[in-house]
Amino acid sequence: MNKQDMETETMSHLQQKINQIPPLPGVYKMLDSTGQIIYVGKSKCLKKRVKSYFTKSPKPPKIEKMVFFINDIDYIVTDTHLEARLLECQLIKEIQPYFNSQMKNDRRYSYLKVTHSGHSKGLSIVPEREENSFGPFRSKQTIQSLIDMLTHLFPIVQDNNSFDFYYHTLPELMNPETFMKNRQTLIQIFSEDAKLNCLINQLKICMHKESAQYHYERATTYRDLIQSLAYINHNLHAYKHLTTRDILLKIPVRDGEKLFFISNGRIVLKKYFPVLTQSVIDTFFNEGSRMKSALVPIEDEKAGVDFQNILFSEIQALPDEWILK
Image (tube, rainbow, N blue to C red; front, side, top):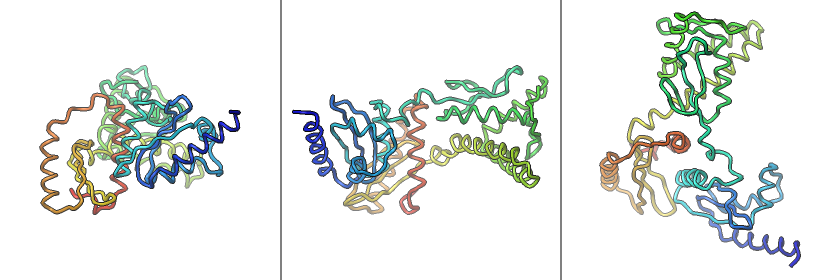
């Protein structure tokens, strides 16, 4: 069999596979000619998503390259998109497919550390959690950019419910006493979302003031700083309502509904029900409440970041009536 015939046979085989894929939520796996999984993805509609890889529409170069190596397709159907996303994350971490990039390299996630040395910038990036460190964060580049920009504002000193700071074209050297005041302020800013939001609001005022005076370069610096601090704020504090209370979700599935009991940012219990009554919901909630006491703390918080990101974004997107408690 020549090369052209082999390619035709492969495409025929893939088309048969695509025709068999149901229009349901789930995870798909792309395999090469050796049977190795080279990509894992998820979709609310598996059939439509997988089929899109083989249309003649323009695709990013990375996808074009991947499609060339696809020799087979496997898939797993899930009841909900939430479960598809969590399963995708789990498989990517376990399999480490070549063409996946996100969620695969969580060992590279970093922490922002408030340093104790007056010879440093006051902030640094560390690979593991240490005293007065915050995170972990996916984007090391964002954290480094934040450090570089903040040094132009040091010292930042808390004054009642606001902060005193000035923009310095060149970072200023701080004496030991000023350094310690700046250090204590930074710890408070990153520990408490109210203080971090206060700083962000002050920076917004500075940005608008600079813009009104046609100092656009300075205004742009404030804008970038605000965006970096918003990234920090989201990662540090956005999950508090998710991780500090129990949540009960009711998500419609094909021929019924599925309940999820979530505690400490993790799914403790999930069950499908063809018909839901208040009695069934109460029984399920009580069962989940009993089970949560047996939860073992997550040892690998870097890997846990991605799962919490998924849970948070999915819950945020759900209609209010699907969130029962």
